[in-house]
Image (cartoon, rainbow, N blue to C red; front, side):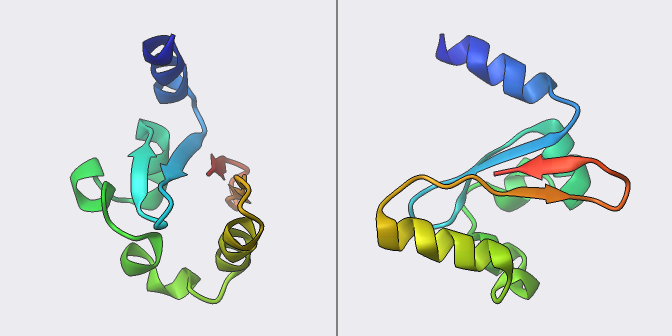
Length: 88
């Protein structure tokens, strides 16, 4: 079942990524890598704000802090100017 889920996520045309409890990249699908302009080797295990320091004071950062404070999972969707989405 997990393998099927991963196949579906990897085949999405829109970007999808997952962060671990320390805000490090745990998974990024190929569309997400293309949107971010990075390889999986550059991102997996790296903190989101280390990789993208310009996001440290963003709505994404506030959403992640809120999720930690409330001890709840969080979903955040970024939409590009071309209308593509990146879900995390």
